Image (cartoon, rainbow, N blue to C red; front, side, top):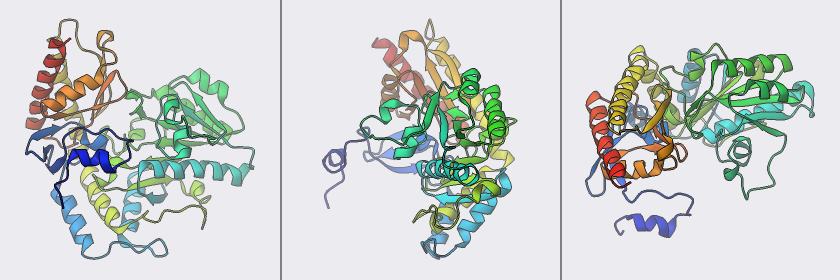
Length: 405
């Protein structure tokens, strides 16, 4: 077998991704090493997935223990790790019922199908409109990409599912004007991760809840990126005076192992009766064992309270870097907890990826959220020394971009 190379990616994979030239082969905590042995500080977290860093001993132990017992039995049979995970999720949230699956896109697909099916069961086929928001992102299935508010992701995949209305994010007046008896569900992110790390205002989420109640529609919270401790709350809805009917969770739920869930109230969940929906690997024993261990670790005061402490350390470092740049680099730092969006000032607009590439050259992994926002989603337990080292590398990256301007 020849040595795996980056060139092989282009030879054998479809070109829907454009990964960097480096191939990571080992991780530990908040550090990664590539094929050449070069080390990176990880402020990207696999896009808000590696909530406990890389190769966390408790997750490795849960995986290996379960691997020696049972991997897969299909949904013709129940399994202990799946039932245990569902119970933990219900006990920690508003939810009373859980559907287990493999990815955020699957969880959101299930949520949207449930929204439509519940309306069909209770009101008939004419109550079918789903309201969603511009710049929102909910996955890459045909249904979720249609509900997502970024037209470029839908282009060329038509005909698309209909009865979907997109409104401006955080615009209560537009929301009130659009709502009607035909509205069956509203899908919203507490923070638009892919859409620029934009926070929903409390007034906006409260208006969605109020209007859903008035029109007998379901409020669906997409917490794929904000969930499992990312904001300093187990789920971001807990920071607001709003409780959804349906919530979706993935990414950090398995700490890197593919697993996802849709949570809902029992009355709502009745509409997914036997045979209405399914997932071959959903509820897989391996995935659920890892997710249960991750949830036990993250849903603790020590980890959740530590999220804000780590954010403040990063913000202080970013402000220091910003202060060195004359007119400044960042207009604001958006988001909550360790989902952070550093918005570039007008003179640097459109150049977020340049900073990402420069950071990678310095041994720091970052993300972007559109062309104007540098995004950070490090481990929820990233040590102080890794934060400081990452910030030092970012400072060098900023200097190199500024010097080349």
